[in-house]
Image 1: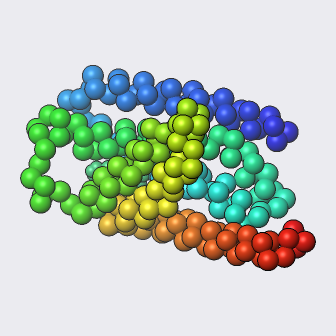
Image 2: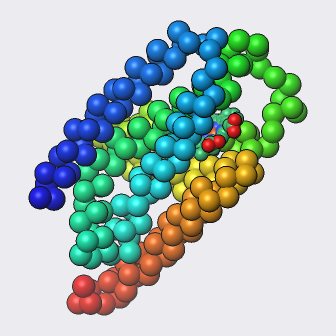
Amino acid sequence: MRQTVSQILYDTSFFLLLALWIIFFGSFLLIDKNLIELGQEFGEWSIRLLWIVALPGILKRFGAKGLFQTIQIILMRSRRRLGDIMFMLALNHFMMVQGFFYLRYGLPNLTSIPVFQYMGIIGLTLLLPLFLTSNNYSVRSLKQYWQKIHNLIYLAIWFIAAHTLLNGQILEGSITVAIAILQIASWIVYKRRQKKIKVNPTSI
Ligand code: HEM
């Protein structure tokens, strides 16, 4: 059962990612149309996926058992793909709510860009190296640096939380802050457990 769900998620996420690439290139044909509403929808889905992508790591470090462990294992397999989908949703969001305006009318005066948008831009920029290296070739060639690059998620999530909070999306922002805090808490628990195991290896 677990394997079937895991496989369905893995396969479905491939097609979702493909669809998002098609939407990304296709939307350039609609550059003069108003795509803001669709762009907002992409932003909403991107942040939901960010929570989902963060979940398996948190559950693993907390040493989740039972149903939570099953969720962790299922999500872990598709984690990189889900991360790519999250990035593509965020990229489409950016293009539709701002990027196409920049392409049509040129970059605005940098002081006229609201702070919440800067937060989004920083968040998206921090996610770019993760997206570019989320493939087996990068895992193999970057070795220990791969994990270091992917730790950028722990920083990016705070900027994305600020982006939504400053834009008045209190619920989305609060959930994102809660996930970011859980990430930190799970690291503390994990490191403490590691220390205990080193001091007393029979405690595992
Ligand atoms: C990972 C990156 C990002 C995520 C997860 C994200 C997420 C969101 C979410 C959830 C909203 C609320 C949507 C709604 O109104 O229902 C939003 C709004 C918005 N975002 Fe982002 N965003 C990201 C990056 C960016 C970037 C780079 C920009 C570009 C400047 C941007 C510009 C905007 C704007 C202008 C709005 C307000 C849209 C409106 O209400 O008309 N976002 N974002």
